[in-house]
Image (cartoon, rainbow, N blue to C red; front, side):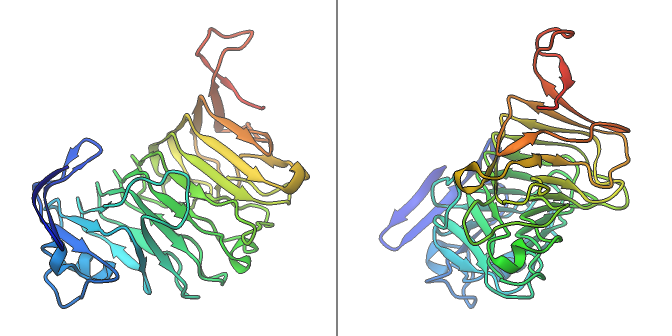
Length: 326
């Protein structure tokens, strides 16, 4: 990041580098929930906007605009349709890769908000923010829904199932990947939570839900991500494939951790990946991944889907993909 001007009370960012991509070609839109105003222009830190909806409305599709978010809590009262291609969100606080409610923290307490952000714009980048749905109602399904190709997440905390009514509903999750969510890249993200209030007890659920019922998204990758859950019902999973065409082709988890918390390790969940209704030809590939609190990666590795693990086996050369059952 290069700072061109700095004075007391004002910071202007001239060029912002977001994990390797130059975001300096579009407009910068400043967002500050505490000191901003939707009557401002949003063009400088001193004229920041107050809400994410107002910041999104000033962006122009495909111009490579970036919303720069002050490190504070920002309430999101209504769902944001993030529908402009190449439009980005960047938190100005430091990365928080272990979860928690600090940094640039978008949250909702509404009891009728399905998700905070619904991404339908292509090739959008989101970094260094938290997205959390605190609505204590079964209607509060998720924190983030991705329904566009080429989304790039880095250092993003995605938190659902926080409250009892969410955690005990089979439709609730943290992150949903829908029909057009192909070519997703998620790096150093935390998905889910393991707090005591969100104790999940519904079969056929996951903190990551693939929901496509039309043509499954393909060729996505999670790198260095942590998946968290709090459950004491053995049939609860971490990743769930809801429909016959939930995913397609290849999905990779590289150097990822899957952890379910149960006091005194009293309950071991059956599996990390629940095949659900999936029937399309699809491969889940694991590289240097680990799980704790689960019996195995998947209990059903038959048909047109396969969970493989980048590990050596007695009948395979080192590094070859082999079936992972433990």
